[in-house]
Length: 614
Image (cartoon, rainbow, N blue to C red):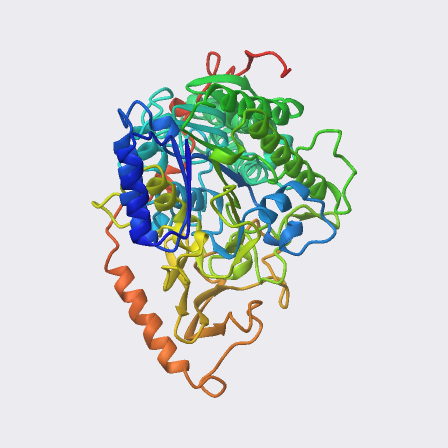
């Protein structure tokens, strides 16, 4: 029996439950759309108590949860967010029959810290998933940094509540601590029952692109060291021949051998990175090293469909973490050259097709009405991904800045869509401030779990807002970090309906007058290439979402009041921070040979252990 309660008064709700209990009705699922959100938890517990065993029938009591996370997608890349030249019918369909968030904010403007915040519901500075020296993300699979084992993810809590939990796609939150097989940061150590995908991330270096995250810098450093050693070797050899120095030939020989090694390593640097970072794992086993790009999209879809089929009796939590639309924009031949926006547009439209395939799989398994779906991007699109007059990064719509910029809206405002047929109102649009961190308490409480009380959780339960039982978001303030440095903060002044944004630090765009840091991979967070503003920059996002007009004491009567209130909120927030080890600083972000996953004798890391997808 399915009980559907719409806008019931408290007395009639209690009466309905009492009458049903007296008649011995067993409720197997519940859809709720009511104005009394505070009664939801109690109502669900009553319904569960009516069942013979809550633990034995948990699969029928809680919704399935499907989370879809794009990589580097700009908010302006999707039709339902205003793009009329990019074809995204499947994502648009989610918004048409679901709830669209127009002020959905990422906790960071780059992958690793944003995803850490998403999974834990906490600013990444709390877990140490930030840096202070410019290493913005985890650089190597063979590094020791990663999501600390004492952090609690929503997957861990849902697993304890009886959910089957899976992650398919990108991880990028670390792998090993002390040996190549300890897997201390692995998804399976953070609450996921099943993992298939990339431990690190898709990168331009995986395909030997000119847009390189590591290869070019590594080659330059190795070449410089080779030149230094070659000079040292020649100097020692000349001094030895001319009897100017009295040393044995051993230092000369070792110096020459090391110089040859550096030159060889520099020549093969690209291949080394491909084998070290661009591979696929199933749980703890490497299945493909290096990965074969044209197999990846079919393999990801096959894994998603297989997971849904295996767990269709529910409940399940599945995070599909797309490798799209990060460079090198690996796209299958069916979508190449089909969009109006080059290779980037092709990749976006292929990802949308993948979303459609996943939605069809839900329909096939009869899971559509019992599954809460969430779609978002980890942060804004990259403006600096340009090469040879082509743009390989996303469009962030009317918002200033992009990926890597800690405070500007273009780097942190992302698409956010929820769909749950029969529960969430179709076509609803919410302009209140929300965060990717809000997914943590939302899914935990939907699954009957408890939000941890032993730590600060920065996310807020979104369900009242999604249902329409709450008028405003629970976020009065949101902080915007770049690495460990606070760059900006926003204040939602609810009594005035105003959204203030204060920038303490902004990057220096290059060249002058540009809207990004061209010539770099991303804008810096500190140092000479940022500006510390005194007084801070003030914007009214409710009237100026593009952050085009700086407010001053002369133009804004509330200037000093806003500054004082935001500064007070920042101080209060900082009092809640505790010292933690920074996982992305130099020591945790260096490649270590003994931590390198390898499916053969190191360094012969090569294998293909599975057949092509069906």
